[in-house]
Length: 525
Image (tube, rainbow, N blue to C red):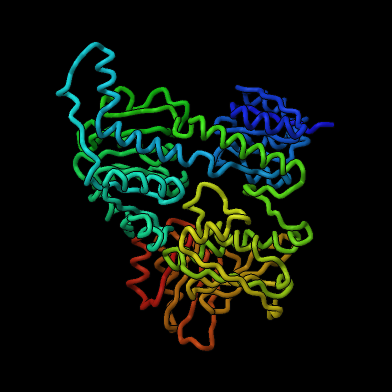
């Protein structure tokens, strides 16, 4: 019996034909309501969506035969990946299908806003010949600030250089060497970049950190007459604030293709002459759609055949027996990647992943992917997958090494990760296989990390813990668990505190002022 594929949004005919050529039964059912999708999904082995269809836990729960979910595009934020993973369903995408189209649309919007092309076009269609109202601005010699130097940001930089623009960027996950190769001057903070920019473009995933990343303070810090563009994700600009600054003339123009709620039929920018608005069409080119259709068809077919899915974001192509051993360590590796990034404050140049004890003979690829996934979690649009992990690491200037050690000391197995000399190790314990940090900065500790933590390193002396506790207590910050790390070769102590509450910059400043600290980190894991 042929396996069945449900397609709920328009994809290129090339993709549909590729599925049918392989003997799959393809049903195209557009504009299904959430209730209709839940009712329709049970008999299907695969579903292909774009950005509008939401694959919720309820849809996944109703999917009796579903083996793979294909997103004909880059991001997967309309798919509940955790629910799919819990049910053993592969989620895959087409990560490179539309990057050229997105970069070109960015340049189109940049030029449209700079030269007021839509306004001049509307004037002509109204029967007017008005050459004086549409004085524009050249790109030559102007400074373009790029926030996010991933795949699309890189292509935009290449195209902007051809226009003779000066390029600056903010991307804490981009290596200096890569930025230099692109001809971009990299800065360490937004505050340094904003006053330099004549034009701003963002190429970032939508996360808690990037949502409303540009608000009143950021627009106020910009150069008078700046032009801003967004073809990435809606919500990176606070549209209400942006509209205020456009109305005041501080922002000379804006050009947006993406919005917080879509379809977007009304916003503070609608009706503003200085706003160029397009209906999320950056990826809507014949070439991108054909590419996405072909790529997702190949991935879905591979998944239904039981073959490796190169673009799977929640599955590994490793054998099942190996996965049983190492897959439980992936969340721990992701946690260690996030921790190391925050301790270092940047992506490392050298990353070493060491498997010890019962893991020593395992393929480290999936665990390397986990570390990188955590390390680059706020930078990428999709999860790092095993096949492309080393390639992604190289793109950010990270050289990856792996090693194995038969002796895990008192543990059955452990993973140790070293990033530019900064070390952390973890093991698992209990039926739930909970991750425990067993070493940090070469101090021996044993603690289950919570979502928030404070890590102190200082010369050991009496009264320090009491002082820390008083400051945190006065600020309403609760210490849930704590461990003091030891290292016979160090005169310092390492204190790891899991905390709950709002750890503000003022709280951190108070801690630094009250204690002679070697280091203090506030971690969000």
